[in-house]
Image 1: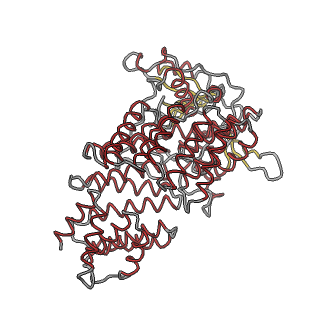
Image 2: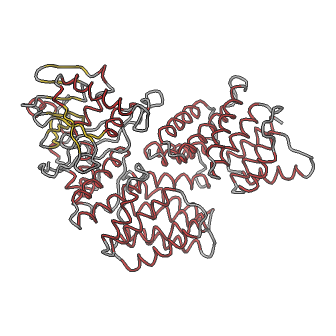
Image 3: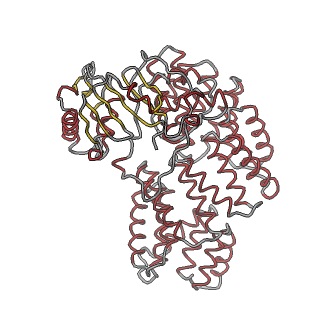
Length: 620
C-alpha cells in the first residue's frame, strides 16, 4: 500500500487527478471500503478535478478523528477538510482542521511528512488570505517555500511551484511569483499542459512589473501550445492572458485582437467565468481607446455575466469596479466614475487593480478641480506600486498625475513617479532604480518591523517640482564609490550625489540618515541602531512634517500592536514621549487638533525645526 500511495502521489504531481479518480472508483466496486491512504488521495483528486460536491460527501463519510489511521493520512484528511471549509466560506472550521493536521504531523516519524507540511502551510496561507490577514499569510507562504526547498527534486515540483507562484501574486509579490513560475516552466515538458499554464501565469506576472516584451513572448507561447494540445476553453484562456499583457503594455488595439481570437476559440462552450473575464477585459480595452459606446455595451455584458456567477474572487470584483469606473471616465461621466471608485479605493490596498482604480479616481478628481482627492489617490497608487513593483497601464493619460507626484514630500512617491515618467518617455525604468532584492526566509523582519500597508503622504502642492529622470544623475555614470540618494526637506524631495550630502543638508537643525541609521541634532549625533523601533516613526513624522500623524498612523508607523489594541492610547503617548526625548526638546513635537467637532488629534514636527531626511535611492 505504501508503494501504491507513492505512485498515486507521483500521478497527482503529473496532473493525472482524473486517472486517480477513475482508478480509485474502480476499486470501490470490489471492496467494502478503501484503505485510508487511498481515501484521502481520492478526496484530493475529487477536489482537483472540480468535483467538489463528491469531495464534500467523501470527507463527511470519513471518520472525524481517525485514531486508527497513521498520522500522515490523518493530517492529509484534516488538510483536505480545511481546504473545503475555505472554499465553503467557513474559516473557523478550516482553522480547527489545520490545528488537527498540525497535531497529527507532530506524531509522524522523524524525517517524514514534508509533503503534508508543505500542503499545511499552503492551505494556511489561503485561509489567512480569505480572512484578510496578510502578514500571517506571508508568514505561511515563507514557511511553505522553506519546506519546498527541503524536499527531493522531481516533476512534482511543477505543481508546487505553480501554487507558490499563485499565492505570491495574491500577496502582491510579483517578482517572487516570476521566480516560482519560471521554476515550474523549466521543469515542465516543453509542449505540455503544465508548460502552457506556466507560460500564461509567468506572462501575467511579468506584465504587471513592466517586462512587457518577455510577458508577450510567454503569452504567445501559451497560445501556441494551447492551439496544439488544448483547443477550446484553454485556448481561449491563453488568448485572455495575452489580452491582459497587452492592456498592461498600453496596447489596447492588440488586446482587442487577442480577445477576438479568444472568443472565436471559445465558440459555443459554456465557461461562464471565462466569458465574464473576456467581457470585462474587452470593456477595459475599449475604454482605454476612448470608444465609449461599445465599452458601455460590453460593460453591460460583463455585469450580466457576473450576476450569473455564484462566486467571484475579491480581486475580480475589484477589477470589475475599476472597469466600470474607467468606462464612465471614457464616457465623460467623471462625477459618476468618482462615485463608483471612492468607496473601493482603499479595499485590497496592495492589489494591482486597486492601483489602477486609484488612478482612475485621481484623473477624474483632477479634471473636476478636486486636487486634494487627486493627490491622495495618486500617492496611494504610487506607494503600492513602489512597494510591490507594479507598473500600471494608462500611463499616457496619467502623465499629469505623475508630474504632480514629483512634488510629493515622500521619496517613495517621487521614486515611483520618476519610474512612470521614464517608462512613458523611454519605454523602460531608469537604470538608477533597480528591482529590489527579495528577502530570504531567514532574513524576513518580524511583522512588527515591516512597513504599514496604508500610508498616504501629506499635501505638498507648494513644493517646486524636481526635474524628471536625467541621465546626468544616473547611478551608472557615477564615479566608483559614489551613489545617488534622496534628501527630503521642507522644500520637497531632491536627488543628489552622496558627496553633496553636506551641502544638501546645510542649515538643517535635524538630520535623520536612514542609510547610516544616525540622527544629528544641532551638532549632537545619536545612533538609531538601538532605537530601530523609533526610526520608522521619526521618518514618518518627517514625511508628514506639515500635516502630522494621527494616533492610528503613529501606531502603524511604529509597528507592534495596532489601533485595535487595548492600550493603544497609552502606547501613543509613550511613543511620542520617546521621540521627544530622542530629539532632546519636548517642544519639537506639537500636539494639534483637526478642525471640526470630531477632529482627530495629530502630532507633528514643530514648524521652526529645519530638518533633512536622507534615504537611499532605492530602499530594499
